[in-house]
Image (cartoon, rainbow, N blue to C red; front, side, top):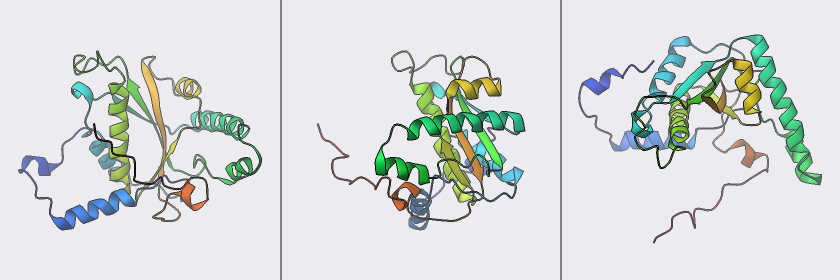
Length: 221
């Protein structure tokens, strides 16, 4: 990975109004996908999306993201089992109508998605020489989150859906994938072709949570 796009060696691009409009569409149509078709993802497309993810900003240029493609059936089963345990426990924290609504939500595409990616933060990386991390060590994890968002947008632009599964036990996933001890799980991503396309988030569509009003998000001091 980490090969720069050829356009970067040509010179500064021109981002015109048409590009900005399409970029706004990309952001607006990025969805957290739970329903996937079973057909395989083109390997070249997946590699391109991963390459673009490595162009994300990172504290001290530390580039702490570590992507693990989970193809082994046994390891996938261990992750799915963790989800089932956590999902049942999470439902138990709600009562009455909210509990019933939770049970109707599809919160992961672990069974259907052809590609699984576990994304870790390498806390032991020497890249960046510690710049910017002494005062805010959490910046390493934020850097990985930025790379995940870059991957997400790239995947969407290639017609792929991405679902971020957070209802998991990080320790169980880390153990199942046998990664180095300094690696911290940041995300478990399901990737594939979506069954359907929607402009509105699934949790809005199914009545779990509407988008919050814009007022009050920007504060002046």
